[in-house]
Image (cartoon, rainbow, N blue to C red; front, side, top):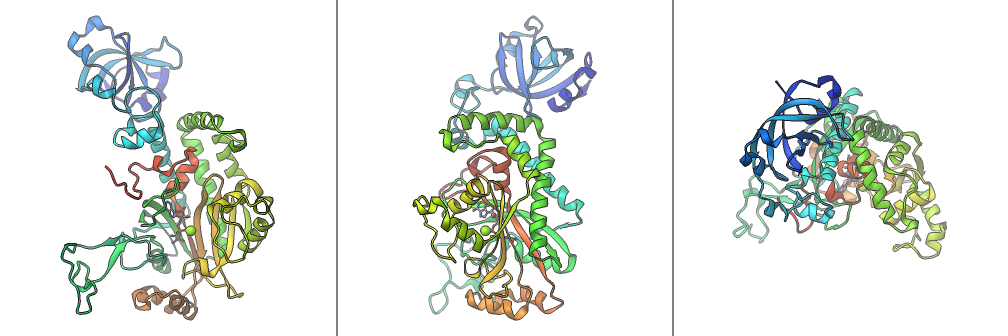
Length: 482
Ligand code: 4AD
Ligand code: MG
């Protein structure tokens, strides 16, 4: 007797017919007191267990119901039914956990179509559904593909801190970390909070990005990447924003902006190609879901490709590289703009692009992923390298169809004096960044990196439309359940 997961059993197929095996899982359905569809999460497919009820006591049979968990010992046999090569003739069934059918009725475990909203409300149970478990397996494969990519290219994985004293993006969207009793916060003589009495002896927050620490590490290790949780207290209740999300941030010494763009493009292509290869079954399933969803949309909102084609397209097509200045011209001259179809009309050079503009460029104008670069300094973070024109910085954003910004990156300002001036212009306390500035004093070098919003990649690859559906337990404004 050997213990198998359903995935390993199915991949053996006919090879193990007549073997005695043991598997465990949750009952998806039980038909005619004879056929159990069992799933253990190892893959999308269920295995059929055939029960000869004469051989089992009534109590056991009665306890087998949707959502209950069982362990089965049985003989692998050629399947009589359609769809599957093999099934298991049960010899012994042990009930691990029962599930009251009346209570199951109230949950998303009830085998019928549920809305994604309902799945979110029962996020603790949605791992048992086909859709969410497929998404989670793809998410895992993407994570693995990312580590694999960087490892194979000689990058070192660095764990940057989650609690920091600096605001890397300077956007002031931080969650504070304290162990003060919030009812009696110590104040100094001026009535300001006295952080010297707080746990770390200073004001601290959850990190918004591991970049600054990542840059420091690069200045000794050459090529690093981080892959950690990041937190933003931005009150954006959209289908693309989370308050807690995972970010992948490579950083490379002796890299300039063009190298950075090349890395970002190659990285996205390879990671997506890897998952197309490894997650065939789950992606086929998500593809069917995607196609059904498209059919329900009005004709003009449908995409011309199905999910798999859309992913293959990314791995094959070159990304368009367009400067911010060129993009503004394209947008300004577009029919869309002239007909007043943008919520934020495009008029002046210097404006920040909204996601409607990004999506217009990617989905309507270029019909391919776009890398926008050389943005106005004023709308980007302090650490980006200033161009000779003194008004743009060496920034780049990668924009994807249906998503908008998936990656944000830049070449970093490596010149001490220019950086100090920028820090001043942005009203940042230079003393807080003494350690960051040190790297510009002791053997500074050109370097560049970027940040990929991991959930935005999972969103794109799974063809889902709400970021809350691609992370196990989403944190969004007014929502931190589970
Ligand atoms: O563009 P951002 O803010 O860049 C940085 O944080 C840089 N420090 C990265 C770097 O150069 N090392 O964020 C990077 C990416 C965005 O492109 C987006 O994909 C994602 O992180 N992102 C979010 N994803 C989900 N929810 C949010 N609230 C996000 N904010 C940014
Ligand atoms: Mg950005």
